[in-house]
Image (cartoon, rainbow, N blue to C red; front, side):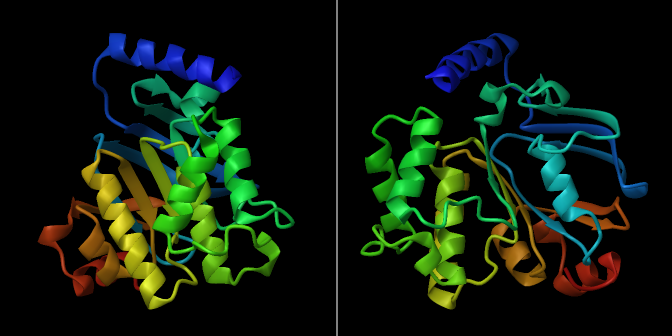
Amino acid sequence: MLISAQQAEFTAERAAAGAAPAVSADGLGCTIDGRRVLSGISLEIPVGAAVSLLGANGAGKSTLLRLLSTLVAPTDGRLRLFGFDGSRATAALRARIGLVGHQSMLYRDLSLLENLEFFGKLYGVPAPRERAMHLITRLGLAGREHDPVRALSRGMTQRVAVARALVHSPPLLLADEPFSGLDASSAAALEELFEALRSGGTTIIMASHDVAQSLRLSRRIIALRAGRVVLDAPSCSLDAEEVLETTGGGG
């Protein structure tokens, strides 16, 4: 498939270029409908990092994730992903990114298995049915694989959306409130999966409103306030009260 060919070319180029950070942002800014949403974002996130983005509603977390996913172009500044220019993202570069957003991006009339097989084939995944079933089982959805997405609860739909983002084994996972709508057992399974991904070298950048969970799951906290970075520190050096005070509360 086309994406597979581009992916092979990308991998060869990256090997020639040598190791590079998963994300390198220099002075990123974003203006949407005349409103300044992000300003002066400069970050370097190495491969294999686990990072949580925190901040009050409207702080710019979701917009930053959309910039990092290349779905939105920055108004100013420079973004590089794995050493390549994010403003000229190719299909091969985008294939290295998995995104869990506020919308599931699933086809509601298709079953779980049909959705995941479709996205697996789109990305040129070998044995897409087997990969889909692996994720369905890993996320506690075995037995529901033939149910249409429209018949699922919000929490189950969220789990399928996570599986969709991971079906092509991307080295960079961007997750916007991935635990939203999950019950305790589902959240525990997803936490375990995220830890396994991180241990395997996947870079995870997660926007969250849950400070305590973020401190537990991530190795680094980046907090935004009014579109600017106001805190960037190892999670082990922080406590929840300090983070809430810096961000102005909530998530």
